[in-house]
Structures are given as C-alpha cells and as structure tokens.
Image (cartoon, rainbow, N blue to C red):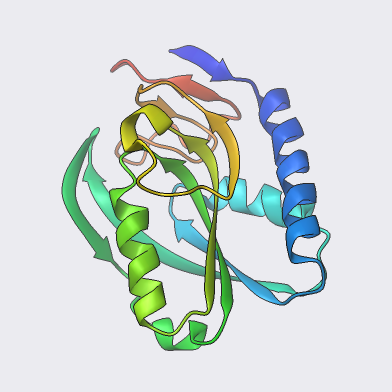
Length: 171
C-alpha cells in the first residue's frame, strides 16, 4: 500500500477544519450528523477540534458500497429523522467520490424538515463527482483511487490505520 496522507498531515488539517467550522457556526446551535461507519475516527477528531459551544452529535448509517464497488443504491439504516426536524445539520463524511450518496441524503434531510445542511468531508474526489455536490468543509482532494485507513475500509478491514493509503488489493 502506498501512503497518500500521513497521520501528521491529517491531524493538522483536522485542526484547521475545526477552526473553520467553529468560525462558521459561532454560537449557532447545530447537530454534527456523522455518517457511519467510515467517518467515526474523523468525527471524533473533528469534534474535539471544534470550539463552537452549541453543537451536539448524532449518527446515521448509510451504505452504497459492497467491497470496492458502489452498488448504485443508497440504503439508510437509521431512519428516525424526526429528531432532526428544524435543525441545522453538519454532515460529517469520510469521503465523497461520486457524490450520489450525499446528493440523495441531503435531499432526504431537506424533505424531512431540516433547516440547513452543510457538509464536512475529510476526502473528496472532485474529478469523479464533478461538482454534483458542494463540500462546505473539505480536508483533502485526492485522486480517483480506492483508499483505506483513518476509518475507511475494505470489507471492514484496515480502518485502524492512522494514515490514508491507496489500496491495491493487498492487506
């Protein structure tokens, strides 16, 4: 595996994102809505980097991948969005590639009474999604490679790596 982003590089960017998010929201209440499972490590680190005083965290599980390929269909595994009605939401995602999942989920939230949705993603493959979705707070734009580490996995494996690496089939 080839390392694309070191643990130190990720930590520095997370601190910068936390500052940007804190300045953006100020004292305005918001819910950090974490997309599980891949975002859990990033979400924990970004939550500690945010100094804005009025946010809470919630979690939802979406899936559209099987192995290294997208299925093309989004499944939501925690459909209790009533609790989010009337809220400002900051979606925390690990990676945006095609953007299909986030386009669908943002529309779903808007249809269910959320007042504002912003997106924070550690990784973005802008060459793949070609501006289908706007990432308000982006960590890194990366090439169109399958990556693992820092929460990202292949079939549940390699999430524990403290860095992000290109996955080429070996483990």
